[in-house]
Amino acid sequence: MSEQPVALPGPWAEVVRRWRAVTAADVLPRWATAALVANIGIVLTGGLVRLTDSGLGCPTWPRCTAESYVPHAALGVHGVIEFGNRLLFFVLAAIMIMTFFTALRVNDRGTRPRMMIIALVMGLGIPAQGVVGGLTVLSQLNPFVVAFHFLVSMGLIALSVLLVHRARGVAGVPVPTIAHRVLVIATFVVVWVALWLGTVVTGSGPHSGDINAKRTGFDPTIVTHVHAASVYLLLALTVLGVILFRSRAVVLLLAVELFQGLVGVIQFNTGLPIVLVLLHLVGAALAVAAATHYLLTCQKPVVS
Image (cartoon, rainbow, N blue to C red; front, side, top):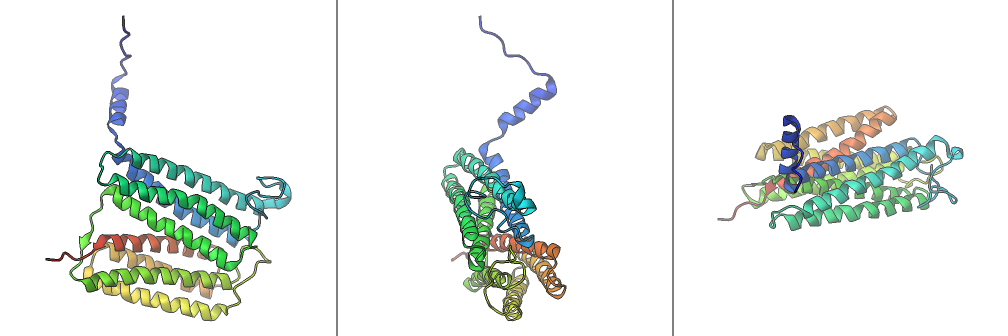
């Protein structure tokens, strides 16, 4: 005689019913959003490592010291901060594993392969980023290696936005002409140029990650003005986009740029306080996310 399943009370039965009704397609946007938030978070904690001079808190890699994978008391708070940043990569890796396997379970055969590929590339990017992070330590915080480490994180943020778009089924709006599409692409490219020049400014300034770390050797004032020129160009292209498109995506990008520019000006004129530099890092991450959203939203014109 078979046993009858135990009947759950009314409210719990409804919870179970709803849980069973949830599909991979419902869950994937949440994991994609979590990946986006986590990648922005790792930029923030990485900046905290640099700004507290904890870049060599764990003086070697992949171990923290020659004898141990974890910091010891002699390394002080710098070792704790650096090791904490390393641990966050495991959190990010776990999120990406769940994202990939959720994408694998999506029933839509048309969108599943693309989402799987994006999630796989992002997942492989996590250990690759860990290796680049190790190289920054082994190179004694060479500013060019540190810059590459930062730009890889920005690339993962852009991929996260792409995955969110695909997972949520965000439809792009065709632009009127090829010239409009060129404007969108040019804006996206200039965002990355401004980011790269920003890393040159950082590599030439005082916040090196360690008091003994080398600098680029460039004049900080000159590279700051060059970086500012790229930001002015970016603002001009974005304002033109607002005039031509008036879409939420380009207005959002302009708002992020204005916030980022304001923080940049204030931090430059107040001696680069840590709080403002952290805000500027967050602004950079948001600028990449907003620029990617803008690029994906404004699609190619429809050819009649």
